[in-house]
Image (cartoon, rainbow, N blue to C red; front, side, top):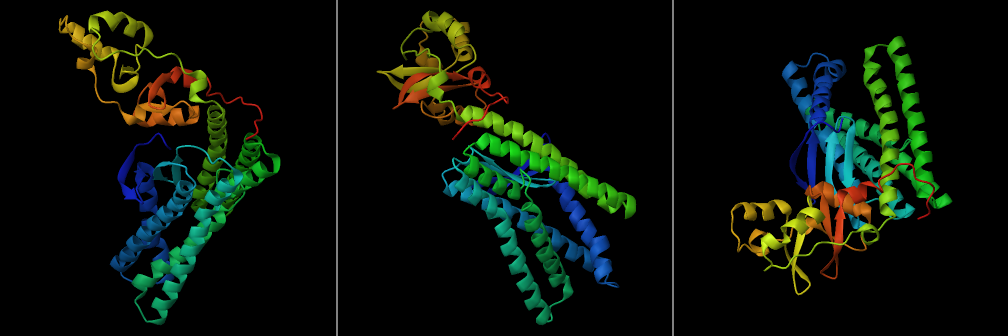
Length: 375
């Protein structure tokens, strides 16, 4: 599902919001069900254009509700000092891409409950809005989708509180197990197992529904299978992130080739090829980082047959995303590489180059077979 492309549509509270192309399927399904099934059944005799208008309003309210649910998680995470790279909505809901995992069960709990609580608040407010519009004699074109979304938000809150990771209820369960055992990985394994069992149970119940009641249960069957798969893959991802979080960049960094700005390219070329063939090469003056270069830029200067070319002529400004503090974890380093597209980072200590960190060095520690670890 996440292999499909996503479209960035803007920012909310400074956090990028993206729509996975699978989300448009949901938007169309919700609008279509409301237009051609729900509203014609609830309000027989209404013209098609009226049901279509209500369906569009309902689909837009559904979209806004999911955005509010997901961003409540993100805002709580950011208040806890955790960066949020983006929020992506997809076919079965949404996901907040965090820069790192919560550092304690308390923050995990706060982030987990924020979404369902937002859905409860939305359900309450929408129901009050519906009641006020109904009592005021407003046309059902307007209050019908509001009433529908009040119920939907209540269902979303209840469903997300089910105790199966990575649902919000599963994250609450993981927070409790983490607090009770002191072992985050074990807590994740147990909560993920509960999520897989829950997914299988939903799929099995939906299969019975398909046989006994019809194909309208297919969506729930697919959702159960997806939840089971997501629980398993989330466990593997968490194991990797925990393994990386336990290692500091300074523990695995290699010595960096540091070039002076006035060194001849012809002199440093061989060392650059041997030491940093695919990574950024720092350029420093008096020990302080002033620019970066790479083998490709150096080779371009060599091919120009400029025997007097100096390193600084091939350099460019230091990209902030290519720097990482020596005390940062490999989890932070992996996220920085993913965001920047760099295959290596420069490790700094107090503004000075301490070493270099390659994607291969990070990958060596990205293992899923991790034993219990206390955090």
